[in-house]
Length: 314
Ligand code: SAM
Image 1 (cartoon, rainbow, N blue to C red):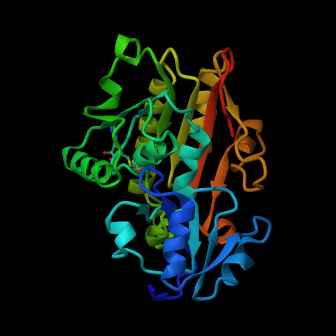
Image 2: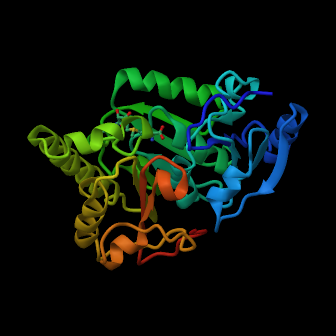
């Protein structure tokens, strides 16, 4: 059995790669290792549910049916299921976008900013390798991480494209079937627990403000580009930033520009942790935080076409 190594408050989240193993089989494998299965953890009192795991119990995430929750500090990096790609060590918040996108099997998905490929491989897992994913990445080194991750996780429905997503023509015939789009662009990363120490220190710094502004302009342009694909039905925008500039402000500005065709849909209405601000659009978005959700700081928004039927929205 792997040891709980330290007292980090964030649990160890494990995404089951359903391309290689079922949730039941992964649970059985950990039980055989000596871990005690708790079943589904409470959503209303998730924090107490995690505390009650102690050092030897694990459970199912109350929101995400393919995510297991282990005690904080559990080190599974060298676990055989991790090295074989049967499980992926992925933060609970970072597992939200693929579930919000919820692409039906057989459909075509576009991942605009794909490397290192956690969300691409998650979408492939939800689609059971059916249909098609087009995964764009502009950075050559990160392209190789994407390649490795998709190989390791047994993804076979994805075409990787080393290209700036902003340079593709949405009206090109090859995109005629693209209905589901993930937009997970570069961001400040200010929600990552490992970087949170710097957030307050840098927040008044001119260079930091300029950097945020540049990121915001980039995020707006990439989200708008994704919304130009003629068959797009659902477009999910996410960041691991806690800054409103990269989150609610981006979504509000873009939503205003595309309001004839898309609306921002309320996702996971059972969660009370909505976007910042009293406007209706922010209330539709999700903000995850270390304190309330025991995740990295994370933001998710979902645009849905208003003039077309959309299957399987969460
Ligand atoms: N979705 C990824 C995952 O879950 O593993 C993480 C994506 S990371 C936040 C953003 C990625 O987008 C980086 O690898 C970056 O190189 C890439 N990127 C940034 N701008 C891009 C563009 N214009 N076209 C394609 N990829 C881009």
